[in-house]
Image (cartoon, helix red, strand yellow):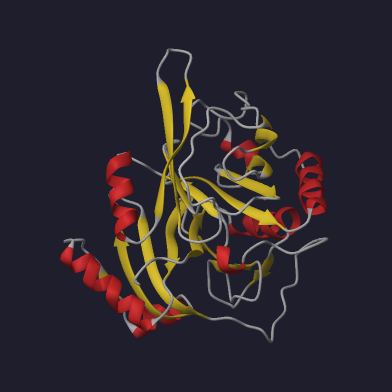
Length: 305
């Protein structure tokens, strides 16, 4: 098998690194690690060396997604799959892999121009327990499900589906949402493990990334995060609610780069069978004073305060 097993890490570019450090620690509860590299920090959620690399490059956008395969054999097998499919990719040097704290690394882009890094062998630090940046009642739900899920830029749903099937992911249309003009909006969800989905497409915006979801094992952490977001006047783009596909109770709020964090709890495992929905259980009300219809932030500077 050459299949992707999880979303292992993300690299994000930001304008204000110090603001991101405070946000990740004090609002999200992540552990911020500074290893003395100018313009860079790492965010931990568990025993991994990092789940996020944050780099001060001015982009305020996704730099790349780190997608994991099981090991060296699978890494080689996926190279063969990509070569045979005519997909351009670059196997990275040992130094480049070490920079990501993995054993082997390759780089490529999906059909939408989203940068990807495929790797195996992440640096896991069992001698360094995770220390949340603020009070937490439980732990982040990572493990075999990876760091969470994200919605990324899509230009062609069919091309996105074919490409990620090539990487061994499965999925399909899970939402067909009626629009006021009579058309139907479709959202494509792909999974690679027991998390309901790892990547999704079909909800747009001007950035490469629409949102990233992080999940807590404790409802109390979701409730406390909601309290903190309100206390710090962070704009909420989508209110508390429960999704139909993964049954997750969550809400969405703006990060300092002007895209969304979904903070959730209680998701069910992937069903591994096709279903579609037209609405959620309840809640998840879109806030038009915070987001445009394409989910872009209306006031990024305010959102970053």
